[in-house]
Every structure is written in C-alpha cells, then in structure tokens.
Image 1 (cartoon, rainbow, N blue to C red):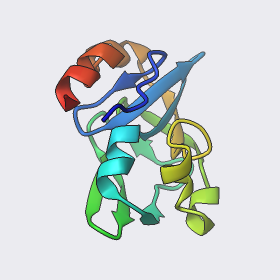
Image 2: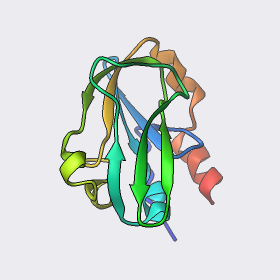
Image 3: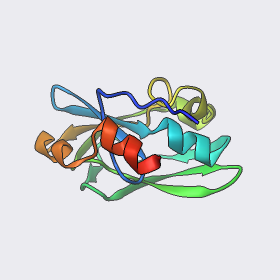
Image 4: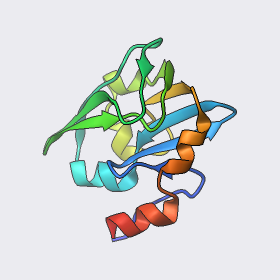
Length: 127
C-alpha cells in the first residue's frame, strides 16, 4: 500500500508531521497514521497560549480502533488549534495534510526540525 508523504515536511517516529513557515510550525498526523487508526471520532488538543516542549504529549486522538497520544515536534507556544476537528474529527482521515491539521506552534528554535525524519526516512520507517 502506498501512502502520501509530502516532502515539504518533517516527521516524528510517532507519525506526526511538522510544516514550518517563517517560524510557525503547523502539526498534524501522517496519512499512514490516520489509515492505521481508522475512523477518527475525537481529537483533544491543547489551548492557544500553552507552552509545549519537543516530544511532549499535546493531545489525544481517538478512533474506532484505538486511542493514541499526540506529540509535539518542536518546542514553542501554541498559536492556533484547528477547532474544526472538535465538530468534524473525520477531517483527519479525509485530508491529514490539509484541513485535518491539528495545531500551530511559534517555534522556540526551528533548528529542532532538523532532528526529525525527512520524508524518505519516514517512508523507510513505515515500510
């Protein structure tokens, strides 16, 4: 099976993705992760203004199959959460790299992204 793995992002081994744009890092879960979870029924996210540390648990995603923790790819302040997911969690399944994003962080140090997996490395991990 082939999964969408955009090469403009970095990935965590725990299947979150990070897309940096001018110091703001948008975070979601990968196509592989949403496929493994099955139908997403609930997403718990932090509050805007919360401070997160890299690799810190920031929320929970629940599907018909499992409940999984979500982890921050970088340290920083939460500047936005995707409130659409509270009413429409299935957006994570339908568009994990677009409308299904989870949060945005103002990164303390974008160099932390360099320590995450590239698209190719992530593809090797899930193969």
